[in-house]
Length: 177
Image (cartoon, rainbow, N blue to C red; front, side):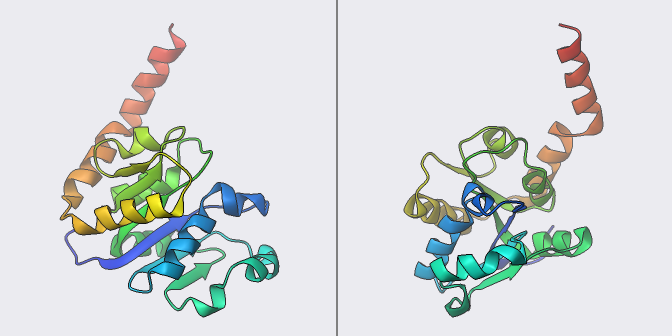
């Protein structure tokens, strides 16, 4: 957790349908990447079958600051989380995003949209955007990169709030209503 972080923004999201590219906010992050060659972006989870259509709409090939992986095994994904400064989850719909939880466990500063479980997971450790807007996202990313976060505190908070014991206790409480 104390290793130096790259000035890179990571986002992970599965794309079983083309619409998931937009639902997960990959389009917003691509717009930011176009404006910000000083930042590196890594996308994980965009299936190869959508790339021909997406390349017609987005200039992926001209963005040297963007790397796209259709899939990574868990260990490689965790390695990238451990070197990334920021994890972005600008989704328009989401449950309780496991990748966001894992990235925070690895000490990433989270940036996400104010939908579903994202604000609950982020808690007091990151930045939320209130609208689906690439400029709002860019401002939140800049704020996240400008701070000196306590990465151990981010990780410990997630470890405590989302431990198996804590989840079990909440489930029992919910079921006994």
